[in-house]
Length: 120
Image (tube, rainbow, N blue to C red; front, side):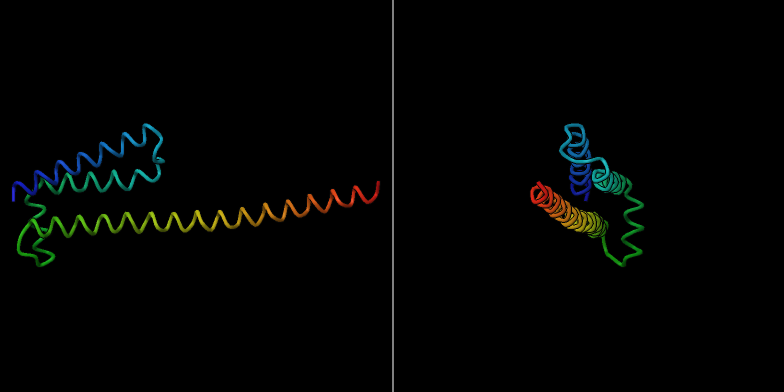
C-alpha cells in the first residue's frame, strides 16, 4: 500500500512539473493546464492523506484504499479528457464558422473586382 501511495505521489509531482514546464515553454496554454494542475494536486493530496483515501473508499464501498485511489485517478482523468473534448469541439465549430466567413469575404472581393474590370 505504501509503495502505491509513494508511486502516486511521484506521478502527481511529475505531472505537475511537466505541466508547469510546458506552460513556461508555451507548449500548452494556461487555460488548458489548469485542469491538469488540479488533477495533479488532487492526486498529490490523496496519495499523502491516507485517512481521506480510506473514507472515500468506504463511501464507494471499496475494500481497500489502493482500489479507491485508482478509481478516483481514473475518474479525474476522464473528467479532464471530457473537458478537453468539449474545448476541441468548440474550437472545431469556430474554425468552420471562420472558414465560411472567409469564403464569403473572398467571394465578395472577387465579385467586386469583376465588376470593376467590367466597368473599365
